[in-house]
Length: 90
Image (tube, rainbow, N blue to C red; front, side, top):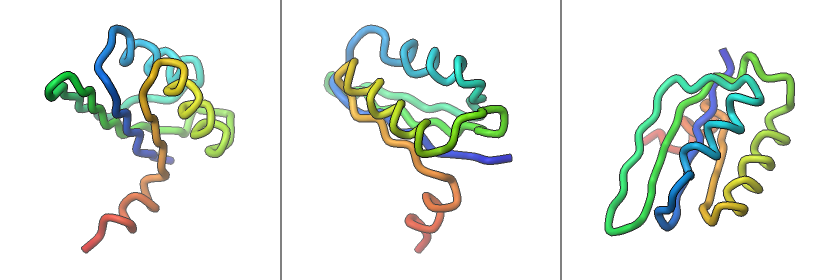
């Protein structure tokens, strides 16, 4: 299984989850875990996804997610799980 971590941060607005999840479904990317919260009007979401069913390369997925975020006014970052784990290991 090829996993990635997706984070979404920005001003809360209608449709953030729908837009991101629609893109993931279209690319056959499965959401394994998801957490989202809103604090003082700011939206924050973190997802662990499985890229195994996706035919696109990782760089294109990360770039497309970033562009999707720009369209809806949020910051979207996508990192490979192994790199994310290495960066956050103490």
